Image 1 (cartoon, one colour):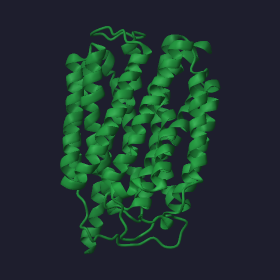
Image 2 (image 1 turned 180 degrees about the vertical axis):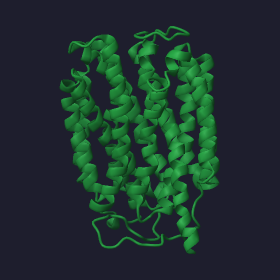
Image 3 (image 1 turned 60 degrees about the vertical axis):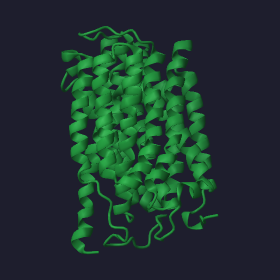
Image 4 (image 1 turned 90 degrees about the horizontal axis):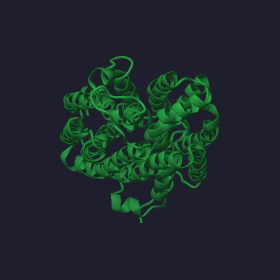
Length: 426
């Protein structure tokens, strides 16, 4: 392997980030929910969705996108990441464009964004991650963190364009924003996909890791998905991933409504409360979400994936218990949103890197796609739990407490993981 070829591995990074910045638009969902509920009014049409309906759309989107990740991960192992990423981008954009025409009804948004757009995310999401860990076996945590950081930061861009920076929602309405975003998604993702190419089969990085606490291992052992299913580590990681991300999914989809409700109880006017809650999600949560992916990914290369997973899941459980007390003032709401986003983002750097550590990189697309099925279940549990509990009780308390318990269970399970070097095929 020549030095020139090896150095080209850095070209995949900007392409991966660009793709994930677009797919990260799914995290901007909370900016639309007040309009969909009729709390605020669209200048084109008036929506009247319930809180539960807004969360059903988001939950279905998450569930279907994860189903697409299982398929897309396998397809990119066969056809290569460039083609499958471009296909995912086209589906994603078309879903939003169709929602712009048929999204006035709940069913229209459910089909267009919840299914068509979600399948596009699923097809394209795994590809940049799989390419990255193949080019960077010496920096799995770092490169995965950088790649998926785009997904976390993406929410900030699309929320702010629709809100404070661009004012697009107020200017042209929710449905026209969907159309505009859909066109941009197609163009940008196809451009980013052009550099997502796998390295040669015998590729090794120019510099190997020295002695460290990293659990990264170098060997020819690669598990197929069927072989991965026969290990206890897969099921431990699956349950941890599901429980850890359920709380984050709840906050992503409910933070604006939770913030408005809590701040009103704290004495804020509804307009001010809406602006503060939007900033909590668009700025503090989104920036910390992206930063958490890079920082925890890098740190996990040094202290090990298992130790990192324990710290992240345990601290997230603590934050879920504290959140109900932190929402009534703008300063504490910003702090809580940042800390929860920081921990939640870490999942998407740590779990793909752990998948490569335990099961190898050859089949990383299909293997991590299968692990991502845990996120699909989490996407059903978290958002609907939050919205449903609020509709029934008028409070988010009894949603945050079980979410905290799930995080603590995930932290406990991390201690049952063995070292990757001890894993053997059956």
